[in-house]
Image (cartoon, helix red, strand yellow):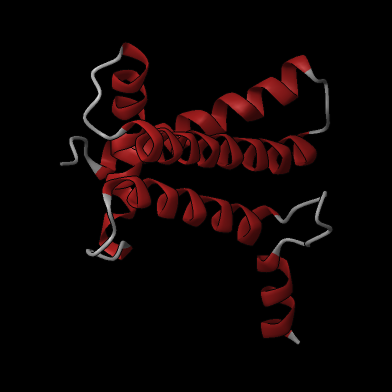
Length: 133
C-alpha cells in the first residue's frame, strides 16, 4: 500500500522546517528564536493539514482514484505515513491511517512548540522544568 520510505519522510520534515524558518527570517524579518518556534509550528501544521486532507479525500472519493491531484498528494504524504507506520495500528482503514498520521504530527507540534491560539505552552519546556526542579 505505502510507497515511500521513512527516510524520505524525515527529509520532507526537515526541508519543510528549514523552508519555514528561512521564510520567517528573511521575508518576515523576525528574530531567530521566534523564527525557530514559528517555523516548527507552521511546518508541522502544514504537514498535518496535508495528511488530514488526504484522509478526508480518501474517505469521500476512495483511495484508488488516479486524478492528478490525488496522485501528487499521495506521493507527498506516503513517506510521512511510512514515518509513523511503526506506531500506527494495523486495523485502521487506509483513509484513517492518514487521519491518524495527521493527529500524530499535530500532537508533535503541540508537544514541541505549543499552540498560541489554544494557549498551550510547549510541553517540552514544562517537562524539562519538572525534571530539573
